[in-house]
Length: 275
Image (cartoon, rainbow, N blue to C red):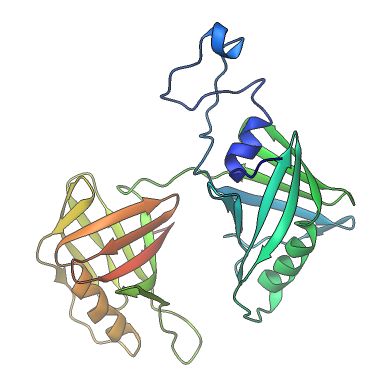
């Protein structure tokens, strides 16, 4: 057995009808026996969880639930509560789950907590994998099943980005919550005309945003001037520090990160922009 990435593992299961990544040359007949193709890359793909069935019962799935494995065979699952993970090995179409990895220990009520517990029980032992186009089905020895779909990466321009975290150096933190347990609704949307607009957590804003390579250069921010209760104003001040001058950006699947040269930054997920 060899340890591989989740995506390499799963895509290899369907090589008879799939093959090389889009944009790469196919192997010749002497090298591969026949030409094969696939619309999915063999690595760096995130699978969105569509459904989970355990003990004959359908478990409610949080909207953000997903699964991904890196090049070292590390499975990372997002559950809407704690991040969970494990190492895997494969042999043919069988994935064997090995060492469990440390995770956070938050207690989450409702759908996220129930889903996390059920998923943790299903991702265990030997699992059969089947890939059909951009769909993946994992089936356990007990008959539990997980249906997943390849998640389409979000483009920087045209996507409504919902800010969900603040970055300071190597430290990342979630947006602060108000007394009702709600976070400020901060959003960004980059347009084709080289501008960005949205909400800073309190006031609406707009600015020029020139994208070049891995950088974005922001022009002066124009914003409304209303006052909002905390933590809206605090979040707005933090975001204003980031949306200033040149920053580096990275889009990973459906997550955006902006960072200044000084290490201040923000993280955002693809979603609908504020109205």
